[in-house]
Length: 460
Picture 1: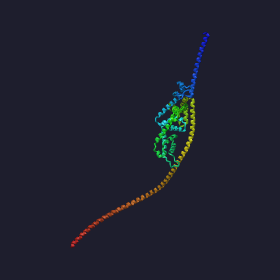
Picture 2: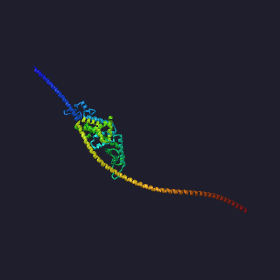
Picture 3: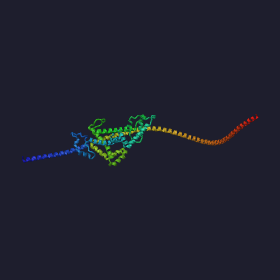
Picture 4: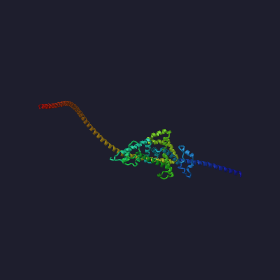
């Protein structure tokens, strides 16, 4: 080979090496850009629903990232790293199940905890009222006992009030509702409805034979069952294993929407638990507890808290930015509907209040008539007492006069008795003398007869 050929061959080799180097650099940069693109896709679309979810190239998405990627995703939001959305749902379910199991057989605590978990995910005014009542009335053993006692007082009033002869007679259930709402305490309409749904006869005599404790326990159990069913349904849809009554297994898109809605709905409860159970957040806890009287202030403080922001960031990381927006919009729409329903319910309650108030006015008027009758009767009796007092005074004066006359008569009688006693003694003495004289006469007469006999004997 000539020198020129050798030079050209060397140049070809160098060119090939250069091309390989450029190709390697291009491949490396392409891989870097591809991975960066994939990371951005994770931020936008979130984690895959399960290990079986594949990308456009039929490759499982979980195979495209490792522990470093997960660590990078979850380091800003805290908590345990999870590879899929279902793993996040399972993690939260295990955590919540642990809290529920810690309640044991205490129905009050379990109902209260479920109400706190489910309240941010309410979709109807009836469900909202039920959860608010459970959360308000069962917040502590003392509040639960006061609530039960309030129901008991209303139950006793309903049993004791028999207005069958009234102008507008009310049933046992109506009287119970009116009595319950007139007693101090918050609203619990759904619980009252559940209490009255039992087979309670309108006959007060038969109803009085029922055990109030049993009725209360059945109503509480029914509330707990409904909340537990709702809890199971939400997690069932998110885990693609809904209960039979909840419908068929959702498709992937439906499951994604269910997971996003569930995780967003759990953010307030998770933030609340983080504040209430963390000793390092005592100041936030006290501030939150002080705001409980005003629900709007309470919710605003909760949404502005660091635990809520962290929980929301984790939610957005898991489901992705695209999927995180629809649940927020849907929740806003639901809240607007609930606000309208609350306004309508307020009007309905005002109308019910007018009706109940009119019933109470009628009762008050009946009681007023009874009071006026009793007052007139008291006045008449007082007048009779006054007249009787005058008669008594006259009789007492007459008694005094009679007693004086009796005393004088007793003195006169005593004097006459003394005089009679003296005369009796005198008569007795005279009778004794007469007796002695008669005896002397009898003796004289015997002596005379003896003398006469002697004379006759002498004459013979």
